[in-house]
Length: 136
Image 1 (cartoon, rainbow, N blue to C red):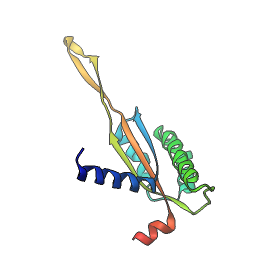
Image 2: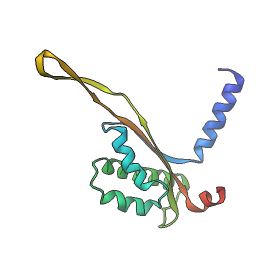
Image 3: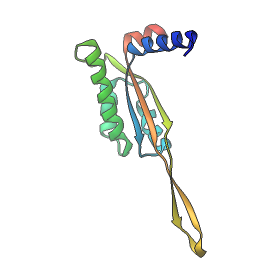
Image 4: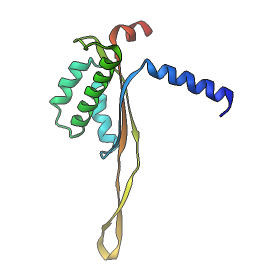
């Protein structure tokens, strides 16, 4: 690894230490369905977002709720105190495509139709409200 690449990698690593996030890999749901759930909570206060996810009918909402609880726990672990209501918000959420399983389904006249079973990766960032307001 070259010197410039090492310096930039170390800078990224240091910046990552001040971020509070949780990541969920290889979720067996299509990214499009997951983005519908994630768009409901983006930018919302965390305890309000937990309420929205709790009462959502989507199957992906349960996974995102567990991920959000994990991100809150990560924040509490790094700051060594409990999160209070109105203090944290969901700063950003990314849903990226993961591997796609390709399967065959029998079709008429000896043909086979391809079925794509998609999966995704979700990364959820949590941040304090006053820090986010000072950046804008």
